[in-house]
Each structure stands twice: as C-alpha cells, then as structure tokens.
Image 1 (tube, rainbow, N blue to C red):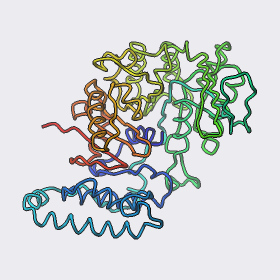
Image 2: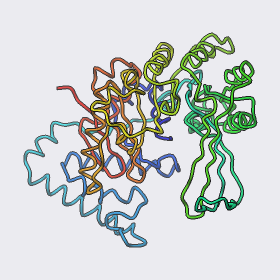
Image 3: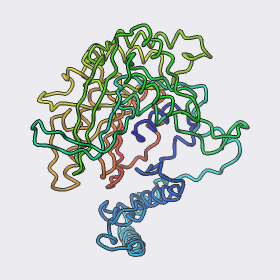
Image 4: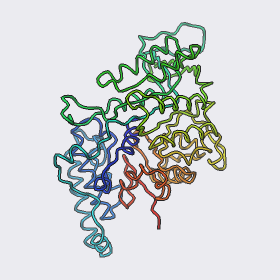
Length: 457
C-alpha cells in the first residue's frame, strides 16, 4: 500500500521540470528509515553505471545486494556477509569496466548518452518547493471499507462442533479506503515548512467515501479514521457521517480474521451494505464534496483512489465507468486498487465485466502478482526469474493495451514491477507527465525493483 499511495501523491505533486527529468529508483523499504537515503543514492548511481556498461542484470544483482539488507550474492549462507558483498561489488565493478574497455561499440554509445543521474544543488527556495504537494489539496479514497477483527493465536479445528479458542482480539480498519486514508494522512514533510513548529502533513485533507452504518462496527470504523490522523486531523469524515445519519439502516462490513497458531489465516467476511452500495450513491457523495462550502473543500482535489471493485457488485462495468468519468471531471489523477479477482477465462481482458468498460479512465492500476495472473489468465512457471518476468511483461502490456496508463504490480519478496504506457496515453492525463519523465530511457530489471517503459519510435 505504501507504493500505491506514494505514486498517487507523486502524480499530483506538480514537480518542476528539472526534478521530473531526473530518474529516481525507489527501494521497496525506503520508508523504513532516513538511513536508507544514501542507499537509494547508491542504487541509482550503480544501476546507471552498470546499465551503461550493458552488464548482465544477474551480476548487477550480486553487486548491489549490500543495498537491500538480504543475504544475497556473496553473502548467501554467510553471517555476517556485508564485507563479502563489498568485495563482490569491487569484483563486478572491475569486470564490468573491463567489459566496456574491450568493447568499442559500448564505448561509442556511452560517449553519446547522458548519464541518468543528476546532482542538484539544494538551496532554501528549492527545499520548500520541489517535490511538495500543495497543502490545500485533497485526496479522495473511495470504495470498500470494513472493520477487521483479528482473533489472535486461534486454534484450527477439524470442522466439528468443538469449541475453538483464541488469545485476544485486535480490531482495526480494513479494506482499501481504510488503509489508503491511514497511509496518506500520516505522510509528512521531512522538515517544518512556512514557519510551522511541527511537521506538516503532505495532504491537507483526506476524504473517505464508503458505507458506514449506525452500528458498533460503524463506530469502530469512524474511531479508526480519527485515531489514524490523531496528530494532523486531516481525515475528513463529514460526508460519510452525514450519509450515515441520512440512511440509518446501513450496515458496516465486518471481516473476522482468525490468525491460527500455525501462522495461517482464515477470513469470514460480511460485505453488509457494500452489496448494495451503488454508483449513483457514490456519485452523489462526490457531488456533495464539490458543493461543500466548508473551507473550499471541493476546490482542489488531487487524486481519486478507488478500491476493490470486484467486491462491490453495484460498481462494476458501466457503473464503474460512470464513477471514474465523474471523478475525471473533478480530480487530477485516478487510481484503482484491485483485490478479490477471480480467475479469468476470457480471450481478451477488454471484455472483463468488472473493469473492461473503465480501463481507459484508469491512470494507475495497482494489483499484486497473483491478481495480474487471474486478470489476464496467465500462469507463472516458477522456473526462473527471467521467464516469469517475461510472462508478467506480456500480461502487463495487455492491461496497457486496454488504455491504462501505469500498471503497478507488487511481488512480495521479489519487489515490484512497474510498466508505463506511451506518450499519447500520458498526454490524456496531464498530471502523469511526472511519471513519464521519471524513468530512464533504458530498461532495467532487478530482483527488487523492475522498471519498464514503452517508448514511441
């Protein structure tokens, strides 16, 4: 989820041209600590150098293993392995350099190509203006929300009528709306700005649009929103609280999640009023935002993030098209987060009954590796990383062919895969200019981060 909302925020940030022309490689765990910043710089510099040397990506993975805090390359099976990894980096650097010096064609190409790395001098004005989203911007998180009740250390019986036990429970917000709101609301600038004494939130207002009933689960969900933004108070629940009062019979979705002692998990899900949550209702909530006079609420909406259409039966196909069309009229960027995809048997995903009519309206489509396989009908071989990457590449391309601008695939321990459409599609969404100029002109694959872009001839 960090990946997803980071990309949505970057797309509405209004970056200046010199920043946008410089490609950045963002590491999977870059949000863990400020200590990762020098590692990110290392990753960018080494990837640029080895790419210019046309060095085998498997050797590059060995050389850069020290960046990712995992026992790879020279450190595999060895503890501690950092010094061995550094020796591996030295060896790969030496071998790649020798490879270039003995290959005139590479030398000629490298002489005419500019480096993908740019060093920018930092001044006070840049510190306050570059890569910062205006504070008066709102982001809408719409779709499915529920309350997750986790049963800890539960016993897993054989299906008989015996009593199963668990050791305590933990209740939190679940679903796309809850997680997106929580993550975005907690993002702050690195330093205080405009004379503030505390860190300012990146987004002034985060607006959830979902069904919340007048029940205990609804109280818990509203409490989750309030505690998630306790330091900034930037999650605005006015719209959904008003809808809750107007429709008191609405029920809040609830997921009971036993976490078994063997580490496995179960899920009992009551979709409640999400079953009848319709496109007309959601469009009505959008209209309320646009006409809300409180502090210019509807004047500057940066992004519309919609989650889990496959679990919302009244928001699929043409209904989803209508929702995203309405969002397109008032939001700078549209992102869709998928979950609960069944296995597809269609010849073309353009005929998908949930997404087919709305693909061309989606700027960023986020799904995981299994969900991409289910959507496109492909299967991973699990024989080698290269073969699986080729399969993912073709699957992602079929999504782009339907009109999506960016496909973002999370791959668990293998990192992520990002593929972008061409300039023509990006021109349809002006805020996507940032993304199209973010990547280098070369394609680079890595175990932890795979970037690919399509280039027009």
